[in-house]
Image (tube, rainbow, N blue to C red; front, side, top):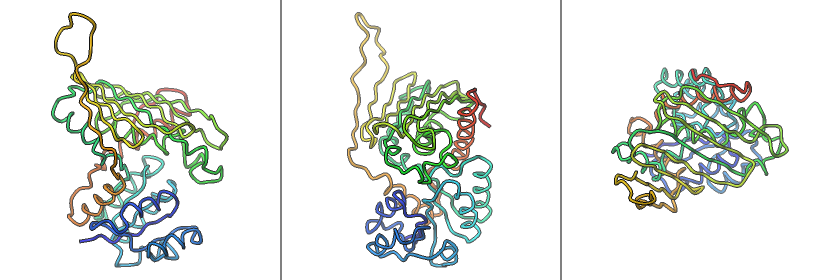
Length: 336
């Protein structure tokens, strides 16, 4: 069974989602599209042979459409999710789910009441390098989680126009959190558990209406700690390291293509302390968007849970709220 979806929003990310599966998936296909700026999308939709509709309401009224994929401004997500749920459509929504916990809960409750799936676009969870960390942690090879350290940066702030919705303070609170930081926070929640409190500072290094850089300290209920630096004002990079009592796992390179596992030394040294040999696994080419969209389609068709647990997504929204609050107050803020 191939799920027939509609793409809502055809900016850079919406087009990327279409391109990820167009003509190369048996699980999901894009059978319709809607965007606020129709003229800019007509050529794209014509090339892909995807009907471009005149309104979101028209999409929702189409009984041949099984699901909607929302690549729209964050502030519109909650209302669009609730409208889709009322129409009986399954929903995939780009991260973050919404811009605060109360609206996120309302959206999730609407989907649950309607009996439709709601999936949030943390596509990096599908990467084999992340699966390698997950596997080693489950096998006990990393021991107890002590700390999680991440860097996620991109240069998008250098070329996004100041009047673009992504650059607006109301759409991008907390500095670089909405653009990139939420991905690392999601990894931290999956591997470290619930977050107790946070301290965030934000800064602005390039001209624009919003802060573009965030530095965050997190404390987890387990006793673990987290450090996150994220920015849209510098060169693109990504790294994520889980430090455990039995070893560390480090994902690196912007495409997550390399993971390094180093076990702790178990033999007392007679000289300088040296690390045991690294275990290195490389995945130089992997399409996370393709994997994510296919997983969404399969979960609907098979009536199985989407791999990103919605409970963890909601806790992530609680952490998001606390980070935004801390960035404004300059104080440690408790996570709800």
